[in-house]
Amino acid sequence: RRPPSSRKDMSAASVRSATGLSARAAVSGPRLRSRVVQTPTGRSRRAINPVALFTGLVQGTAEVVSFANVGDFARLKLRFPPDTLDGILIGASVACNGTCLTVVETDGDCACFDLIVETLRATNLGELEPGSLVNYERSARVGDEIGGHNVSGHVSTKATIAEQEDTDNNRKVVFELDPKWSKYILPKGFVAVDGCSLTVGETSPGRFNVWLIPETIRQTVFKNKGVGSTVNIEIESQTQTIVDTIERVLEERGLGAKPRRADTSESSSNAASKIYQKKPATVSDGYEDPMDALCDEDPSADECKVFD
Image: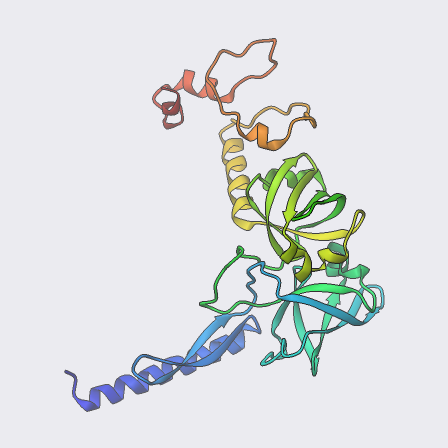
């Protein structure tokens, strides 16, 4: 057991350390915020919370009060349901239609956000007008349940609702987007649509669909969207990192597959079920398996063991 003097010294050192941490957080900018928490011993200390992280579980819809667009800059004012903004501070992050925005002003149940030209270009927020609804989600706190998936609020691209089919218990929605993003959208994978964490159904080049349950429709802007509506898409970051890394490594090894004409009639769910099979390339199939050349050169390579 340490003498009382040692415990006092440690306590003082802890205070100095926490104070220094808070000071560094303040200098680094508004992306971090400190708060007082109770330790198991009853002492208070400063904790640093990340503020720009979302779960994809939309908390409701907010109404556009005003939207002052001056071309390359806009001020957006939203009215939120009662008590939604309790405890919110200037500089806090809120996802609006899946776009991470910073609170610049509050007024009761209303909050204002500034939108720069890139936000207006890359998202559907530039289409808003007074009376429009947007999905919202306040940033998650450390320890909150992640019921959806990690969402950053950085919109990847926009998509358009191409088809919509309602049944008694759900709604099928088909989206169209730039085909270059299709390689990151996989069957049963995650995608954030207007900030909603959704599971991907079927996919094909430039298209994918999701299924919405009644609760999702009731709680989000999907209740007001139809064919032709624009939505924000955020690709799941881990999927994008894995796909890009594999492509880069294969390219560096000279194993990148030769480009072939895309078969739009085949869904990616069917294509994904195909696996490499080591067989002699023939003129009839017009495809040279890159693994053949590697394994012929070095049969002991790790990449070739899967074919033994």
